[in-house]
Figure: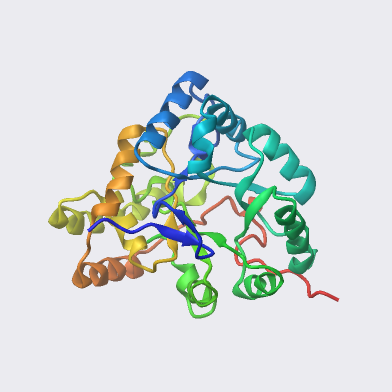
Length: 325
């Protein structure tokens, strides 16, 4: 049975698997495709019924690209739940609205919280944008459960965006308890890098598969001494996937969907074939035995290397902010 739509704040329905648009513009290549090709790709994404799109103000020309698509398809804007992310609240919101060529943003995330500013102050600034009609839902990214609770006490937080995959189970750990906290508060957990930047896609076999300029070449998990060891999890999952007649990527996404009705993976791609493959996970029903076997493989995996270049991500995961005085 197809996976049902999921909700933001119990009122805004979204596709259970979202679309992360970053790879259309940045990080995975030095030379993005021409606008004509990328806009045609967004046409195809829309045609499939995908309605939850994720971008950010630091993804190269990604906001501008989506803005061009919306300008060409103004009647379709109301059908899309559009999420973007920012640094400085007011100024960034105005720029994003201009780039996206829209009068409102459905879900506006704090991309990385300012660890020198109480989260209450940041959320208060976002509440002003809600009242002005510029944003509809508030989101956070990479925060601790304590920070989430404090933010939620100021205004309902619709979603938090965290890395969550069979390679990254940190949100489940007792010492973080973040997944349980989101369920308790009615907050969506938007899982980015649900295929661990391709390690769980079943398609990466060699570092030669990465383009020149692909940022993954600078990530410790993709260093030559770690890469092939990290592929072992995908190889273990392959047996389960074959048994179910699906791909490893579909298995990884279906497993995430089974972790809670509030979990929304947002895989990214610039290939319509891979996009359709990802969306095919909505039709997958894993048995309890499958789920246990998949989890056992993930917990057994010897994951090597940090998820980012360490110097680029200090204090960014499960971030806390100072108390409000």
